[in-house]
Image (cartoon, rainbow, N blue to C red; front, side):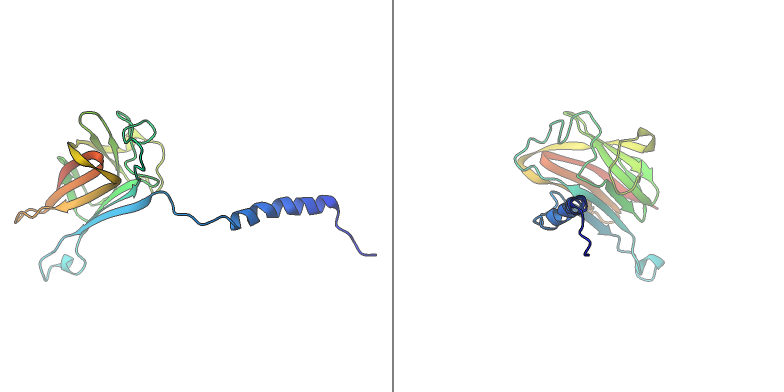
Amino acid sequence: MPVRPSATIIAALAIAILPTVASAQAAPRFVPSGRGTSEITVAMPEGTPDSVTPPKIRVDHGQPHLRGRTLHTDSLVPFDKVWRTGANATTTLTTDLALMIGGVKLPAGRYALLTIPSAGTWKLIIQKDAGEMAGAYDAAADLARVDLVRRELATPVESLSMWLIPSTKPGVLGGELRLVWGNTELSTPFTAVR
């Protein structure tokens, strides 16, 4: 006599399989915010050990978009509260050289960057790198807070962008860290420390 599966077993299998089938049939989609990266390479003199693999400085950030939203709101970029400065994963600064940023010396390494937006002066928070995922803010990890120079832009910028802009002055090994989004541009100088 053939064994017939019970209705309970059939129902349990159907419940277990349906979510898998439904998710397998879901349409692919883009992640709402991509990543933005700015990297500069230091051209070292020929024959020096660093000329083979020259040192680099890199900033990597999640790149949210306005999409018709107002920039300064509690849900997007709140005033006077710590903001992760980007979307999704932590914004990071990685440097192969010791740097001076806004008067603060940082050894070579990897750092997390956050900001405190304000109607007045914004602050850049530099922290020991806490890993890839943005979590709860921990003030104990702060290494420094640097005032950012703020400028209003006439034309809004749709997507958050950060750049490392090298100086073109002869003999100056430095430049500017710049952040723009909406009608706001923020910057602070950096120099390599030898």
